[in-house]
Length: 105
Image (tube, rainbow, N blue to C red; front, side, top):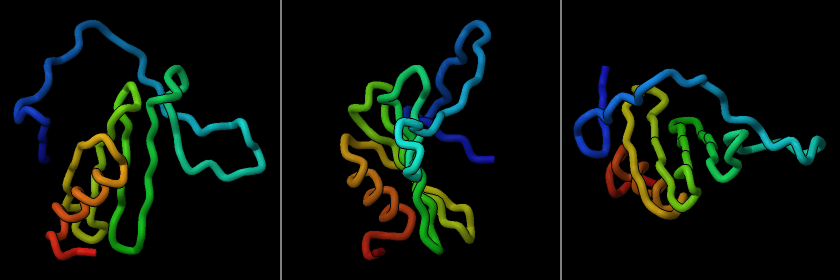
């Protein structure tokens, strides 16, 4: 198993118990396919997954929706790369290039 955090060390374990919840799809337009999820109690905290034949891109917004973390996963090998920035498109580009190299795409 591989573990990694931004600081190189695991974050401190939270004290006390908390109830796990899930991200939910926006239900304001029932006739439209929802392409994103959000935290029920914090709609600015969003999650989106996109894919092609070779790669999964998992986009997670910051809690305050002012930045993004993108995880790029190679579907064949399950190798992964992570990028953080203020724009989702930039994190996707960086994570993809980190995974496959700067000449990818």
